Image 1 (cartoon, one colour):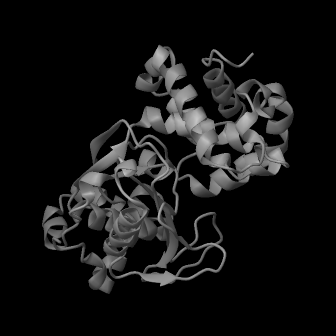
Image 2 (cartoon, rainbow, N blue to C red; image 1 turned 30 degrees about the vertical axis):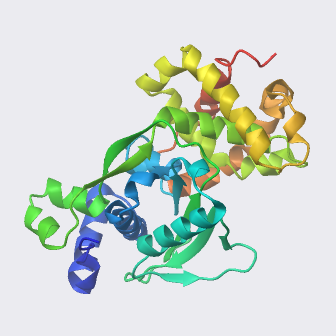
Amino acid sequence: MEDKMTLHNDKKLFTDVLLATAEYFSILPNYIEKDYWITYSLQLMSQSNEADRLVFKGGTSLSKAYRLVDRFSEDIDIAVIDSSSFTGNQLKTLIKKVAKEMTVGLQEIPLDGFTSKGSHFYKAVYAYPNILGQTPKSAVSSGNLLVEINTFANPYPFEAKQVKSFITDFLERTNNQHLISQYLIDPFSINVLDKRRTMIEKLVSLIRFSFSENPTTAIASKIRHFYDIYYLFNDMECQEYLKSDNFNNDFAELFKHDQKTFKEPGGWQNKTIATSVLLTDFNSQWNKIKETYRNELSQLAFTAIPDEKDVASAFLDTINFLHNTK
């Protein structure tokens, strides 16, 4: 494995650069620090000899790789390509290997009932050296990263995208390339799930959770999806995708795939999209969760969040492109 990022080893310089980056971008310092460690873990993944088998996905990828959303997340969501070609033991070995490589220098925090290390899904929390020592009240906890590696997803299509930390971005803009090179924090390339596929995944996830026994609570737990969908809906390439037959075909394919794959919520396997409360009673549901949107996203975002009415409208407009909602 290649050399990993080392700026954090010089605590004074790391702190000075971190605070300067935070001031430059008007972002809380603890968010800049967490972003550094997320990038650190992704860099380690990019150096793995298994990197070609892995795809970075989820909301964090929209921020880190596409620079499409202006919010933070604390999870690193990774999918394994062509997982069906592996046996259960091979998958478990692969996942364990990748997780170990991605978290060199981090300390796992075992959490009963939360940590999962099966043959198809890995989920664990890791602590990074919280050099700032700050624990401000926010939706993103300081000092921890959540690493998830799953084999359930069908991570296609994907593309190689460049990733870098806010610190690297700041140093580039301020003509400090020598520090980037010296401390090995150069941009790097990894496989990233296509943003259009991410939009499909978020839509299917919301529909799925809307069939929960308590749909309002379940949907509220996925409130970040609405924020992400707003930006995806307003992206030019995603707009073209929504107007194509591929959108409906891909949605139907993933919806059926997830109905076969996920048992929870109970009974949703026999449901149709048209019976979701997000279609039959959206305004009522949104009125119950829009405060959650305001509270949670205002803490996660580093720019002003879109108006809740615009977010609701973007979701409905996206859903209206589906043909089987009647």
